[in-house]
Length: 167
Image (cartoon, rainbow, N blue to C red; front, side, top):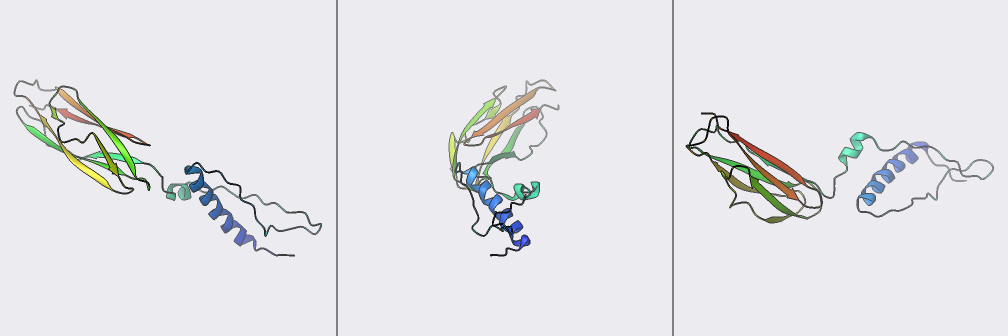
């Protein structure tokens, strides 16, 4: 009769749960069975309940597809000013993904000519571009330009740049 250390089963089960999570992310479903399952004195297989992976372990499992958009803060918006915003699109997944980038400018003040229409990024890499917002001399104090950026791939993200005229 094989004797299996209970501690070893627990660690093996944790690894199997993490492996199963990876495989499910890839849309592959498998069934795991053990050849060294402990048996009772009557020859019947004994079962033991195992906890699922913890939230911390789950957070440690990398996503296949994930994107984030960040924008560096601009300077205060005053009449006649040109405000540059640095925008970064980062593929936070482990797989290469292509993102279609959509942008809009609520008042037409944003220069969107440097924004690519699409970009392909390997896992963990990013691309940056600049959006400039030109505040007209005729704008009223309190007017707000909203520049919207969306990156849509297998998993999408969006961000809105708010430019508020101060004086």
